[in-house]
Amino acid sequence: MPTFVKVAQASDLSPGQGKRVDIAGRSLAIFNLDGRYHAIDDACNHRGGPLSEGQVQEEAVVCPWHGAKFSISTGELLGPPGRGSVRSYPTRVNGQDVEVEL
Image (cartoon, rainbow, N blue to C red; front, side):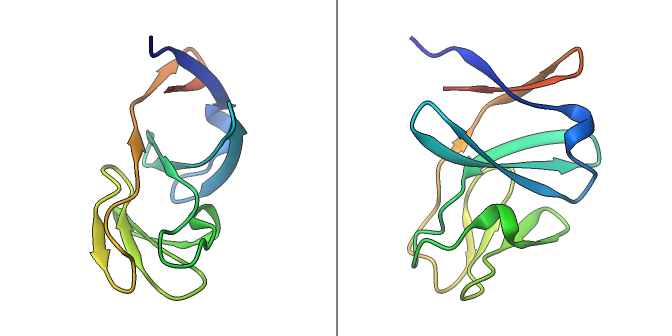
């Protein structure tokens, strides 16, 4: 049964910033888009680049290794050389805690 798990404090992420979080055997990239928090798989599906370290461009993140572009809110592939979407995870803020549903 899916459950929400605390992954960060809201104050840990400035707007437009990403952060890698390792939880329950998964590496997630958590992003703050103007106070809205999103979580996607951290590894780009092209060559495994860390999306949490990518450049945020509006509502997308660009993989720092080869430039694949993904939607931060849905994980949808927006530009090559990615090989399709990455998984996105529901998030919520509970007080100051950012939680992800796993």
